[in-house]
Amino acid sequence: MNESKNESNTEEILNLLFSYMPKIAEERKMDGLLILMADLGRSLVGADRCSLWLIDENKGEMWTKVAHGVDELRIPMNLGFVGHTVKTGESLCIKDAYKDSRFDSRSDQKTTYHTQSVLTVPLKNSEGAIIGVFQAINKKNPPYYFSPKDVEYLSLTAVYSGKTLESALLTKELEDTQAEILNILGEVSEHRSKETADHVTRVAASCYKMACYLGLSEYEANQIRLAAPLHDLGKVAIPDAILQKTGKFTPDEYEVMKTHTVMGHHLLKSSSRKLLQLAAEMAIGHHEHWDGSGYPKGLSGENIPLSSRICAVVDVFDALSSARCYKEAWSEEMVKDFFIKQKDHQFQKELIDILLLHWDDFISEYK
Image (cartoon, rainbow, N blue to C red):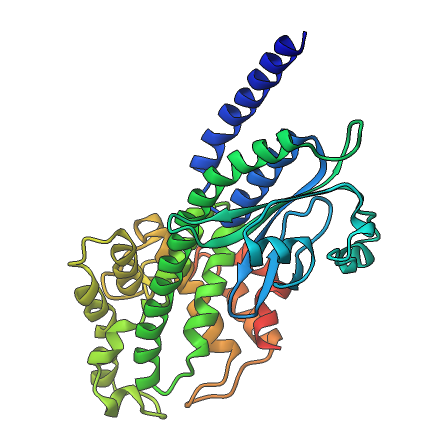
């Protein structure tokens, strides 16, 4: 009878692992990974809640977004059962949390949840360093506390989860570094024209919002966000006398200024990286107009790449809504009226409809 029950449990555990692992392997967002891993851990050990705490070395804290039913929580890295597991590398199996002096009840106080039984297991990277802790809370079935077998199951999951998280954290670090480098390059071009570094940050954030509201995938929207800071990179080739002029351009000066689109494209187009190819597309196309009256090619309608159409709206929105060396910021009413008048002329109607529908979200950057 016990042998049959063990076989049944083993089959159930294997089915759970095989059902979750493909989902975990395909997930690209950190939050999504943490949720999937916490759900797998909860199912494996029959817990009421399961969370994956990650170490924040800079703040000396542990944080989680996946303690089921609550928002992000942060605790000091050296306190509680989680802190003990981080410090010692030991798994813990606690029957009654409130009878153990290591218990930190602040999470309960914050969430009004009552912790009874607790199971913690360390997550380690490929070098054996602890990067987080699995914590399961309140066994749902009699005898209502976790068993050595539960420790074994969660430890098995922790091995797989630790390596997956290590890869995800490395990828995030690379993406963050990449985004920072692109922002710095964008800020260089804006600095020469005496714009603030905030300009490229705002344009990137608003391009992302516009792309999301338009219904693009998270990946597509994020690529546009990353590429957007380079839309004016070509300004590095414009003479200071023109770039920093506070008065109106002469016709000849304006023609020189317009070349920043072509120059930005020239600087970026040779890259084999898809992200920089997208940046090249946005650099040359963000001054094209929906009705064909823009530059440098006079493209119209959907012949203008979507990324450039989005950047065109956002770039002008930022220029009008913020103070520049040659002008004061326009009022909300003036900016809104300008975009209403430019529907189907300078800008695509659908993008202006999105801007107006979500106006408060876009304009909040300027209040």
